Amino acid sequence: MCLAVPMKVIELKENGTGVCELENIRYDVDLSLIEATKLDDFVIVHAGFAIEKLDVAEANERLKLFIDLAEAYSAEDNG
Image 1 (cartoon, helix red, strand yellow):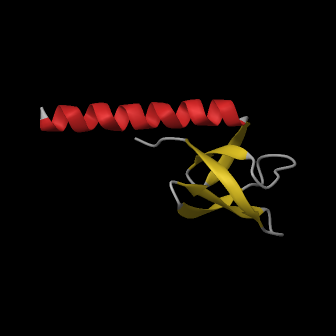
Image 2 (cartoon, one colour):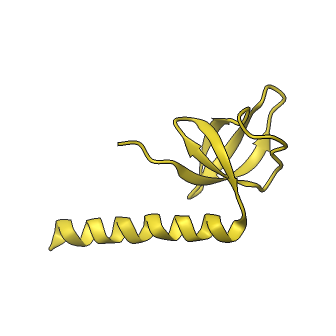
């Protein structure tokens, strides 16, 4: 199963790619599918491609869902 994950754009490159960050880990991401991407934008990344822009509130809400899922999965494994 693949998940699309919210990430913050921290670097833009001239070739249509950039560097995005999630939990202090940096990933090279293809930004060519999204128009006018700027530094500090939040994007949804799937299979190395940014596929959607998010506002900060929506990005934080989705990231919290991932945290909640991880905690529920961990509790199930330890339960």
